[in-house]
Length: 203
Image (cartoon, rainbow, N blue to C red):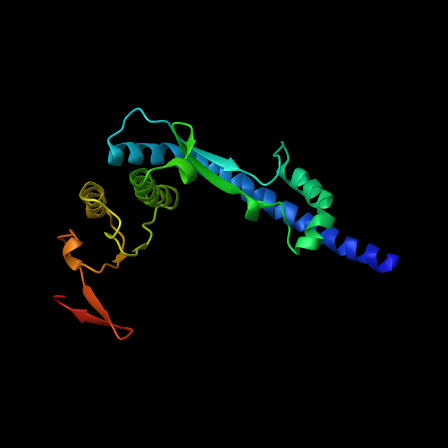
């Protein structure tokens, strides 16, 4: 039994080492990306909300205490939690357990944001992701927007379509009310009926 246990621990050690190696790279990459996203998100949130003096922050909250070497720290953390993780059947530390927290004036938006603040943040984040993606990759992503106007008030809706006017990539948008689609440029309409998408000129 002891020999089997040692073999099992050796196998886990190999997996832990690989998780730590790749996990450290993922965490480091996420932190660098958030640093680039923050000023873009701040700009878009302030433009949409009309609030110029708010303090918007993006915080990376890891599942373990970060140090200079993410890989070594994560490996030690995995080793220290091995018995607990065996009972859980999953690892309790690593990038899959980390969280990204947004705060407005020091308050966690997941807890304290009003409905309006949450909608503004979601819209600003989507637009910021598109702008950052285009800036880093020099390509326009395909934009998928589900129920594009169902949760937006007129002010946010106007901002969204103003942004889309200058968007050079393809946009696929779904809505239950086509009249709410304010785009006046080239577009194709499809009506979903009985599980099929049928081209149409009017709905």
